[in-house]
Length: 571
Image 1 (cartoon, rainbow, N blue to C red):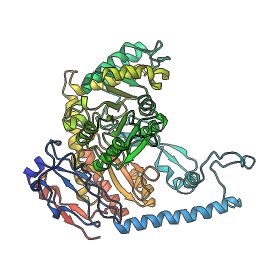
Image 2: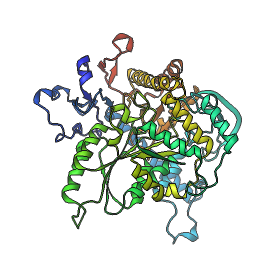
Image 3: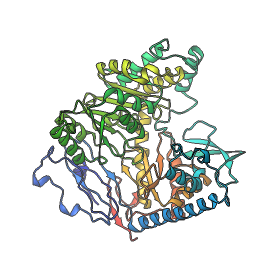
Image 4: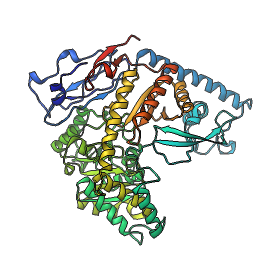
């Protein structure tokens, strides 16, 4: 596909994934919001068949000030068939092994229900137990690897070995040094043991200690906590903010404080487990819309307004739209301008989870709101975590002062949780000042810019090699599709053999035929590190035959940097 510079400057382009074997769906734009004349509509020859990459284009310069490009190439039919066959074979052999275990021919290491407890409600779900025994255990060595260094651009791993097919592990005493880290969420490189952040945290530790041993509402409210929350509010451009000691609990414990029975939650189908848990705990009615699909969201909003609550038909007390900034398994960025437009039109509330996007997106590192150049006041509840871009721990809720004062007395995380550790708080304050330039240096802005450059470069090179890559061009979360179950473990092991640490993900964290490796790019990665990693990825990709893409970008040296020129590749 070729674009003119004029088109790229004015148009918003988005790729949408479709399910294998089905016709491409529409691009998900809410047409009623954005009527446009015929001369602005995308030409018909841009539509692809189900066998090709689905690349749907939308044009709306009113809402998007920059090109918005996402890639979700369809799973090749043969790959999908072989993936299902692989899981089928594993399942058959799993039942055979369970038969041998039942007759004591093969030993079973995993927890099982005792015979005398057979009349009780089972503690273990049968299928999950089956999956753990027979599928997960085969590749368990790819997870929970212990590291013994700072999780920076490079890290040290403790080597371990197993002699019973991954049921147990023993440490060999050897340390694998200088492993390039492509798995940690260290987007801006602040997870480090040297520099101003580490020095400030050490100084505060000597003054305040490590633990507070009380809640904020009792005697655990330090002056550093107050300063941190003011800093977060100033960073985000909102009236007030409050912090919590755990990112997961920030979602799961605060959503129930905001909505309850008689309220409606409209949740993206790929929202994080913490958002899902919070929605369920709230007691609200939950309806799910297709991922980043504005037509699906608007349909649910319209139905909610027209029909109201089930049975009684009374209006909903609140309608809360819940989305993420960057979706951590897809690498996609929320279409926030359109979500805000829908929210305003139907007078709903918006809850934005910026766990992965805060610090990692936007020219100033202020997240997805900054990325699109929007007003933070248009987002009712801004949530984020300190665990990624800031190299610390915990999360925050930000917004209007009335919202924050309400949560201070109604949120379980605020009332019952122990206060954040002082050195962690100092890490957040120092790293945030660095990003804002309040430390008197340009280190923070340089890291934000370096992360953006590394992300574009890494994604472009992978597509040039012929891998299927999901997500937005500007997302530092880069999923590389593996598909087949046997290749999940093989890819992780082969990469580690070559001193590259990666994260591999499979079912149930992803759809069963969409297993993947997930790379997280950091500002701490140098170009030499990325080139070394890319060469290894290409080598392993050839070894495992992972270059599934039928549309391969020409090499960067053969064309201008910003042009996307595709070359058809035979299967």
